[in-house]
Amino acid sequence: MNSSAIAVSGLRKTYGDKVVLDGIDFDVRAGSVFSLLGPNGAGKTTTVNVLTTLMKADGGSVRVAGHDIATEAKAVRSAIGVTGQFAAVDELLTGQENLQLMVDLNRSISGNGKKVVADLLERFELTESAQKPASTYSGGMRRKLDLAMTLVGNPRIVFLDEPTTGLDPRSRRTMWSIVRGLVADGVTIFLTTQYLEEADQLADQIAVLDQGRLVAQGTADDLKRQIPGTHVRLRFTSVAELDEAARVFLDATRDDEVLALRVPSDGGTKSLRALLDRLDEYSLSAEEFSVHTPDLDDVFLALTGHNTEAVK
Image 1 (tube, one colour):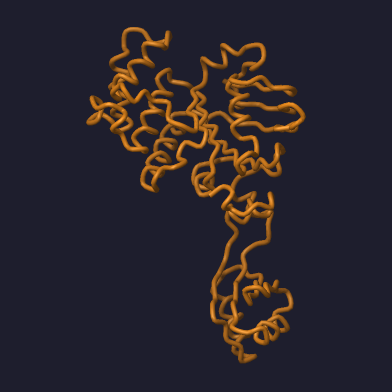
Image 2 (cartoon, rainbow, N blue to C red):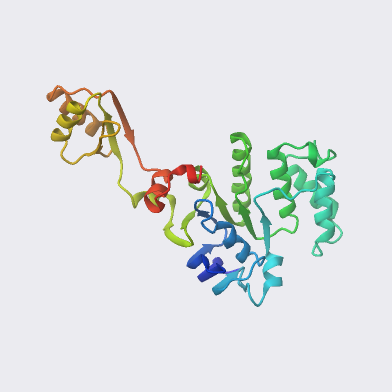
């Protein structure tokens, strides 16, 4: 495989007169994690459905694992694995039986099916519960089993569509560890997520999708640099104090609603000491004092105009 695992150019998708994907372009390097962020309804799942040949595009070109999705759909499917938003396990079967079913359906596996199942159960720490029906599994265990089933054919590109939605923090971090292990083995991960922290933790590249258009692309640090930087937040108890502080710190941004002032700063101890000395010099006292550095929540809000509740 060349250095590009997924290449998308001018991708368009419409439903009737509604444009869902409006000519998007991106490139995913082999052996990396690419995260597609966006609020509900932005077009994330549609993008995954098109890239995995479940849905036909209305325009543009897409190559996955070097194959054109329009003319070489079968070759694309043989190279990828897909884990959707909802765990696709059969609850009547045991964990082992779910995996064995996937082995039986996969024609590329011959002779060593039992070893494949045993290895995946061990890798995902499901050996102890292998003989129990999937209906007895916790949400985190079902997601692990679902991902294990996706890996039965040893795909080199794995699509994870909101894989940790609804999981508790511990299960989410377990999934993160599994994803990192896959990447260490050279697998390419295409991740859509509602959790900004997840993209920050895992992604080598992030693209922000809003209303069918990509509004930003880059590393997490690249995106954070696009918005106003580190600042000190001072909150006061009265409008008079806020007015006085605003006259002292002319480069600050004020928020009258919460009586707060945002003063640009590098966050270092030297500049913080100078700021506090300045407050003392003018006999000003802030009720609250905090250093704030931009995170992906700030990026998302700045780029899309949606607050982070839209993506959790």
